Length: 474
Image (tube, rainbow, N blue to C red; front, side):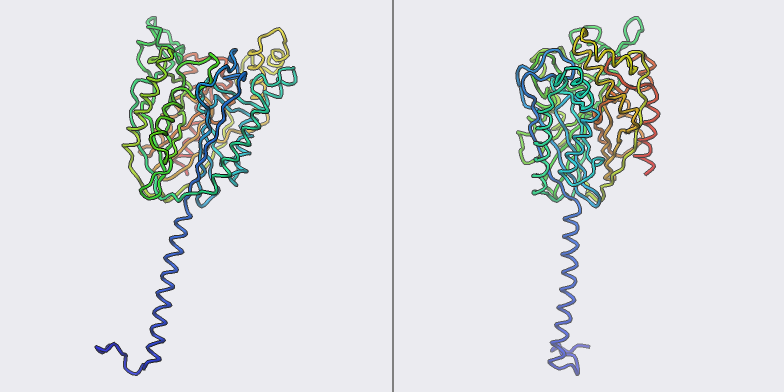
């Protein structure tokens, strides 16, 4: 027992000094442990954000096959993204205001960004937003077109290479300013009068998929019900304690109000995103298109110039409501998984190798038809080489991000939510775009057909199996 003086019997002054030093060392070790643990937690999850201009030059083709090339830049096209750092390899997300990135060009984007971020290509999630007044890039198709005297007709190769370098530099520079991530936040909001399904049941009971992006001028198409859509815009954001760093939003609709006039634009989705960005520059705002191969603004859009702003304002309001609805959760895990998809190439007389080669080489045909043939051949080469589509999920536990290929129909996004149950699923469409449209089985049975379709029935079974593995059978 200690005396009131605090001395222990028989220790003396020297003993007391040793005791004090022992206590100090113990306290110092505990402090060092706390500091080390804090440093570990600080470094466990980090984020680096980047943005780069990817606007096409004048006289560049849009949407791959539009006859009117770019004449005027209404607003810039951007590549916006971020790199996430955790226990595994860094994960790169990049949302691009382009129509599609396909085949060898998709490989180029992932390879270049992977090198810039110090990760592997499979950990790079690249997605186009699918605006039509923007480019389609396909390295294999470009080479095929060059072989028949149509160099740079699909896209300008020099511009593409310069763009890749510019975006890679933006990624590299961003790594110098990594920010700690401690929390996620998730939210959603119902969107008012934008999305409607292409599928319409006509008064004669026939099914049509003709409700395009500007079908509001057609009474039969505009008065028909919205059909199958996902009515919610979803937001997933990253935070350092109570400070927001970045917000990503996703909504399932084709992002066009009007197009084909040679006026380059990120359209109403880009305008809504940038309006939100201007309201608070401290939080990086990124938008992804969801699975929307069969969803357009057609019911609510007449294609007028004025209606672009109307749609942008509606989407902007949904983004703000979704942001305000968010609930934060600590980030404790960041798992990456990926399935390999081998989708069936479409069996059609017009898409056989012989037919495509004949079309490509026929100088009497319009250039646009020959471009489509080159894209078809490029995709056929991809399929025959057995190169799979990487189908990834980033799993934070309570929230999951899934990147779907191409123009997957909205049914696949709804399928992912059904499989995941109560978990928050953030769906991104327009990853690897070689398949073009990816209809559900019911859409195939209803007779869906289009020149932008390079796959056969059988996709739904394969995608459902992969989603089950990614979301449930971990």
